[in-house]
Length: 198
Image (cartoon, rainbow, N blue to C red; front, side, top):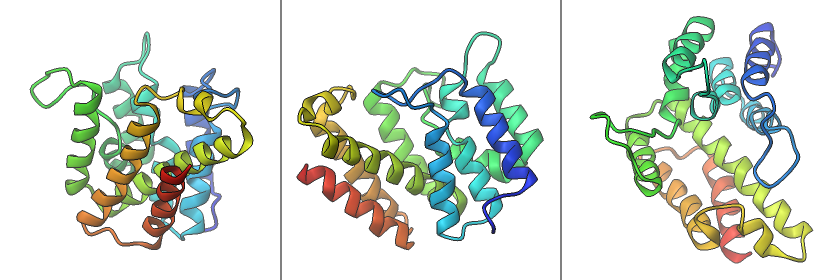
C-alpha cells in the first residue's frame, strides 16, 4: 500500500466536494485536513486501500447531509463509487441520529450506540475508528500545548473537558473489549492518557 492511487485520489476529491466550506471545530483549518491525516495514519500502519479510502470518507455520511443531499444519497454514491467494503466501514463509524426504530438519539445515546455497534464492526472499520480518534485526540493535545487558555480548547466541545476525556477512554476500552489489539490502540491509549493529564 503506497498511500496513493487513482482510487485514493478519487476518494479525496469526493471528500473535498462534500466537506467543502467545512472547517475543523474551533479552528480555521479546512475540514479535509482531518480525513487526510486519518489516511496518513492508516497508511503508516500498512492498512489496505479499502481501509484508507474508508478513512478518507469516514465523516461524509455523518457530516455532509444538507439540502439536496440525503443520507441515503450519500450512502448510495459511496457504495457505487468505492464498493460495499468501504461503505460498510464508513457506516460502522458513523454516529447515527436515529436508532433502528427511527427514534431520535440524544448525544449520549449516539455515543453509546456507536460503541455498541463497534462490536459488530469488521477490521476495516475498527482501524478507521482508531485512526479517527487518534488524530482527533492528538489535535486536541496539540492545541492545548499551544495555548495559555486551555478552557478555550475544551470549550469547543459540548461535553467539556470531563466528557471529552471520558469519551476517548471509552473508545480505547471498547476497542480492546471487542478484541482489537493492533498497535494503533496503544498509540490511541497514550493520546487518551495525555488528555487525562492535560
